[in-house]
Image (tube, rainbow, N blue to C red; front, side, top):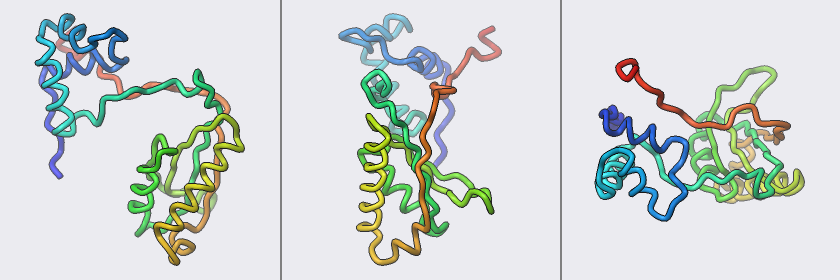
Length: 176
């Protein structure tokens, strides 16, 4: 897979204009176009082109899960055989209950976990039940070898939010 090409100046301006979210108006792309001095069609075409070449991953709604009642944030951590971690991670990442999933290095001997998958629930019991369901789905997907592939797991619950932003592109040195 080829690495995404760098953003041109117009694309950087578009990313900066959208990185905090789309305007909450009936025609958000038209509002962006007006602010950037472009046509609505050009804004849509540029965003589509960036999606297609992998410069941005998606455009979608990111709800505030706390505001809608999902206050139990469970980071399920999994000890997965290294030769299977990508396959298990891709499988978990496709599950509706998982909001994000990623691989991290183990920190032996104290931390054997190398796969992380976040779930949200209205209670700890609900989040734990989701992780149990996920474990069952993984076991069904990977069959009799499941016990050799997934050697352990746990769930860690967050107690507070320390940071809640994605990548931000700031003004470059030329923009002063």
